[in-house]
Image 1 (tube, rainbow, N blue to C red):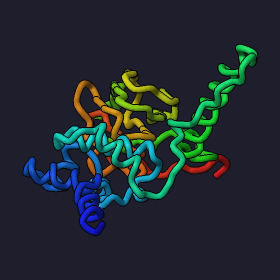
Image 2: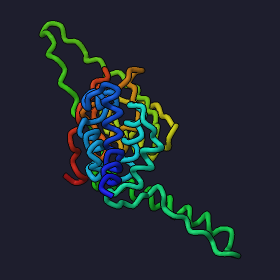
Image 3: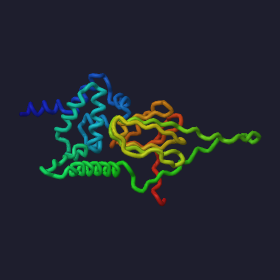
Length: 253
């Protein structure tokens, strides 16, 4: 019995991830940079500290992307994770659908599906949005002092184009430097959006590892900006540089 328990431990999710990474000759830091995530996220996966990664949907997303990078089977690791002894969490993507009783009206099933979708959207909204916030104009950098004998009018900032592509379900909000909201909502895998506005653009992502960003057709890196729960809040300048977004004042401040 002891040998069986030891075998299960060696073949656990974390052990398989660590072994595949080492076979690839990658360090945790190198793998994290490639995936644009915090190295602590990959360390938590290899230690099977799934509670540190937040909701179950984020754990599965990080697990799939890590497995694909190091050549492991995402399906097998997902199954191993699901059957493991991690703390039980409600998987909102697998809510059981109650079968209608024989002779039930045909509208019962669509009503149940609509209720499930509403609950999912409401919960994701509460997790990913901050109550009481509203976009406010960001302070623009002061123009450099012009020569006293040659006053030159300040050129208006050119609009910045931002393209977003979603590989998994994610909530997103984008506003520009004037406080105008350019995009907000929950987007499905495979969808894409393109928008433009005055820089810097304020971007909030609910599932950052599943979103690819390009500014003026240049790739944007999210290294060091993704939180433990997979979300990210950042400012994107017109030249593609990123930095953490400062907190916004609550309504009425």
